[in-house]
Image (cartoon, rainbow, N blue to C red; front, side, top):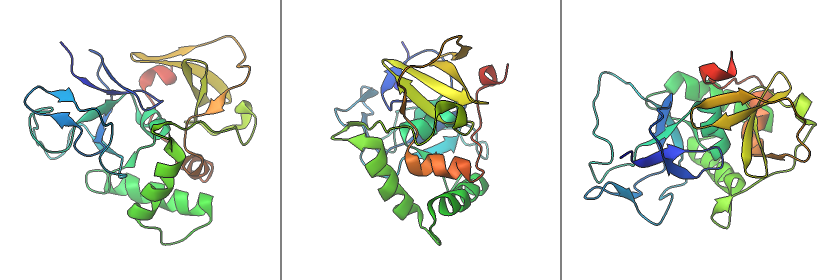
Length: 205
C-alpha cells in the first residue's frame, strides 16, 4: 500500500502509486513506527523542494524520526503548494529563485528565513490553503503558475490551462469561469521576473 506522502497543488498530502519528479519536506510530520502522518501537516515554515537523487544517498522513506519525505508531480506543483527550492541539494536553483524573487518583489539581500515568512502567510489561511485573486487574466499568467477552480487544479502554460492529476496533465477545451490563484503571489512575481519551474513531461506534449 502506498504511503501518504504525495503533495497536491492545494497542499493536501495523499497516498498514490504515482511517482513525482521532486521530493521535499515541511519538517517532521510522521510517526516512523507506523509510517503514517501525524495530525499536523507542517512543523516548520521552511517548506522546501529537493532532488530525488543527490550524491547517491539512499534514504528509507518515513523510517526515521527525521524530516518527512514528501513528493511532488513537478516543481510547479511544489510551488503551488507553497514550497521553494532547497539551498542544500538544489543550491543553484535556489539562488536563481531567490534572485528572481528579489527582483519580482522589489527587495534585496533576502534570506531564506525571510522568504519562508512571506510564503507562510501566502500559502495558509487558518491552517488551510490560501487562494488569491488573479492579478492579471489567466491568459497573461507566466508559465508554471497554477490556479484552482472548484475541486480542480490547473497549470498555466502559454496562456492556456492544463488540468492537473496525480499522473500528469491533461489538455482541456474549455474556459475557466472564475479561477483563483494557487501559486503564492510572491512566487508568481518571481516567475514574472524570469524563474521557470521544471514541468512534468505531460505538460510539454
